[in-house]
Amino acid sequence: MSSASAIGLSEGCLAAVQHLREQREVNTAVLRLADAGDLVVADLEGNLTHDELVQGLPADEPRLVVHELSFASPEGMRRNELVLILWMPPPAEEQEEAYTAGYTALKEHLADVHVHLTARRADQLGYRRLVALAG
Image (cartoon, rainbow, N blue to C red; front, side, top):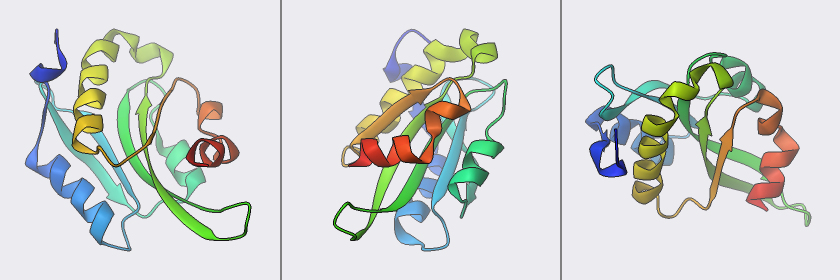
C-alpha cells in the first residue's frame, strides 16, 4: 500500500456508515481492512457504550472506528458528534501504512466529520478526552 488511492471503501463499509447516520439503534461502525489489504470492510455495527467500544477493540490488531459520541455541552445541551478513530495498538504497527491509507479514504468520504484521532492505547480514547475534542 503505497498510497491512499490504493485503499477503497467496500459496499459493506459504506452501508455501515450509512446505517450509523440513519438508524438510531446503530451508533458505532468498526471497520477493518480486508485480507487482501486494499478495501475497508465492515467488522461490526452496533449500539455500543463508550466503555463497550474501548473494551471491544483488539489489543493487537488495528481498526477504523466511526462512533457517534453523545455528551452534554457546557451549556447543558445534548450533543452528538461523529468521531473517526484510527486504532493502532503497538503490536500492529507493521500495518500502520495500510490503515493510515484507509483512514485517509474514510476522512475524505466523511468530510463533515471534524473529530479525527489516532489512538495507540485505550487511555487515549477516554470519554472526557473525546468530549473535549468534539467541543
